[in-house]
Length: 86
Image 1: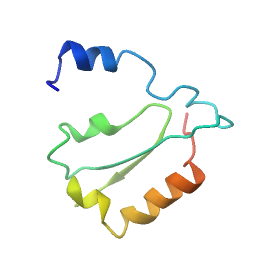
Image 2 (image 1 turned 180 degrees about the vertical axis):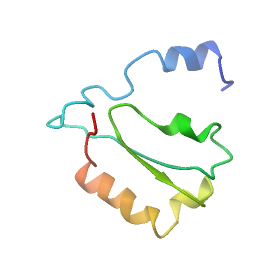
Image 3 (image 1 turned 90 degrees about the horizontal axis):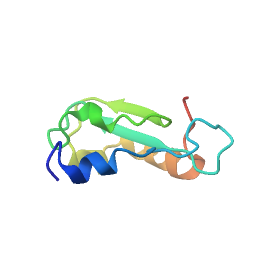
């Protein structure tokens, strides 16, 4: 998974969130990411058009799974599907 590779370019060439701009769509998308993430570089590549994008500060990449602020956001995203922002 090398940035700029043919694989990633092909993967990113299609719509990440089919029907993401339709608030009545069956699937709603949420992206929760951290500005302190040193694994995803740049961290802003976690922003997804058509999704609810939630930026968290001071939480590491692996910390996103257990952080007390992030946990309820994950729960909301799974139960309610978040909301479409486009």
